[in-house]
Image 1 (cartoon, one colour):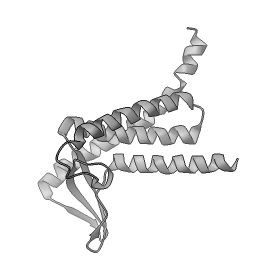
Image 2 (tube, helix red, strand yellow; image 1 turned 45 degrees about the vertical axis):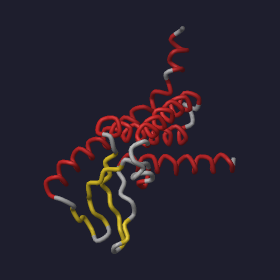
Image 3 (cartoon, helix red, strand yellow; image 1 turned 45 degrees about the horizontal axis):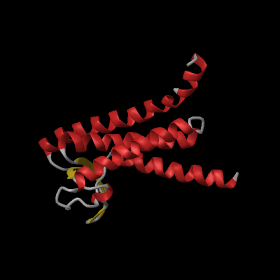
Image 4 (spheres, helix red, strand yellow; image 1 turned 135 degrees about the vertical axis):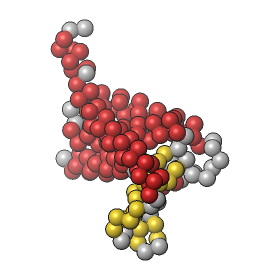
Length: 163
């Protein structure tokens, strides 16, 4: 295989540093939160926002958190399968900036939470937004990257629909 052909085939990898950045920031934040909250307990940052330490065995927004353990292998499988699909999409659409950036954010978030599930058996959530006593389900940086990536995918799709 010639240099030009291999260079084009590997061009999709330019998006991996964004995914890696999400993973590193997510894992570093989780490690810091576990240390901080374990020592000090819940920390109120603002009247609507706390740092907490919650262990989520379910999916986003604690979906299936109390399912008894069968969900762990399912969510590991889903994360691995989604990561494979995302890498294939990145390879196919490497020149589409917004689409590829969105996929990279989703990939980084999926891998960040996958690391938790494999390493400690659950996902660490720590961002707690609330209005009075009504709390939004706690989440983490990986969840935020997935949500932002999904929003960018929607935006990209809307932009493509108009052109």
